[in-house]
Image (cartoon, rainbow, N blue to C red):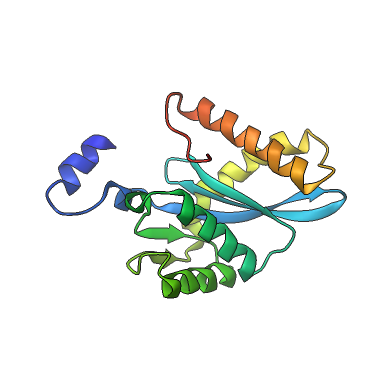
Amino acid sequence: MRLKWKNGCAGTGRNPSDLCPWHMDETYVKVNGRWAYLYRAVDSRGRTVDFYLSSRRNSKAAYRFLGKILNNVKKWQIPRFINTDKAPAYGRALALLKREGRCPSDVEHRQIKYRNNVIECDHGKLKRIINATLGFKSMKTAYATIKGIEVMRALRKRPGLSILLW
């Protein structure tokens, strides 16, 4: 990837993050017998950017999730493209963040279903681990457990890389 950036972007003023869009999606997990929504973002190499656990699936939850990510990353780490599924909540949340100035205006939101195959595949691997726990008793324990799982998976995927979850 470094060579690709060096050959393709050096001297053009483009960022290395332009080559690595974020893929965002949500999945369901059981918390205390009820469904909760696990919002996740990964880059195109499958590394987890961040996650957010919510009891609701609406534009307010998507706004909090995107806001959390944008607060935790540096300006140069924000990609030019954010790929999501066709859920309208992401579009509304991204538009609101752009209006507030928390998200750069040149970030493009792409709602193309097949572009999210990276995260859909990653959901399956994560849910296989989560389903073995037989659910969670509270949102607090669910969040702590999922954070631990994500950190362990990040270390397993690419040892020595800085993890964006902290």
